[in-house]
Length: 253
Image (cartoon, rainbow, N blue to C red; front, side):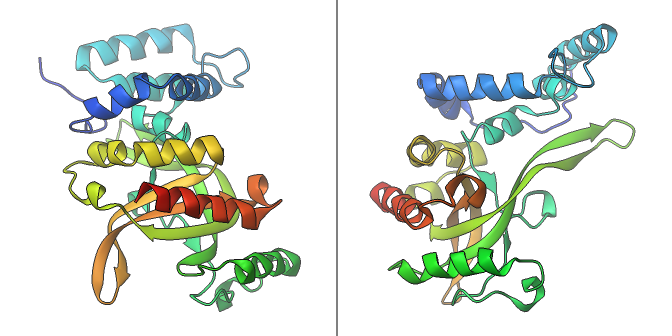
């Protein structure tokens, strides 16, 4: 039977799935995220009708496409669910959309195009934290968002949907060497699994970004890791949270 999947399968994902299954905390996070976005939930404003549910279920069976079924019942692909459960990283600038948006320069100064977009107190707080940190390299005030996807069968295309946008502090660091050796994104996710779970268990709701050959230093390109700490969760004692994130990153290297 030919497979007609709406999203390409992530290759070599078995090791990643095994890591998730071996961690009860991760399984709970995934289940919570699935239930939160489930269209069939009684709390959902636009619940999926029984015929639509049945059609989606049968289509997924015929096409061997789990993501199509998940899109129908919770508007998330499998990897959207993992991402919004904070179990795998967000990709830098996924789907060609700028995310995160960096709003300061290498010296912590607000870029001209964002000077009118910020309350002075918010920027001053960033500067206070910035000035107290010993390692200011690749540390920025930024905006970032979490997202999922919708799918339009008429044009056979998916569209990124922004779920929540936040302002916070972004740390960008070079990825561990072990990640560079991985062949697929799923393998890269697996390679940073321990780092991600350490971050999320210590700093819940921190965004982790990753990119392949996206960090440029001295005319060389590197894979990179980004830790984004939203002000909505980390504004209080922000400098301590930044330092803790640094400790976790360097402990993993």
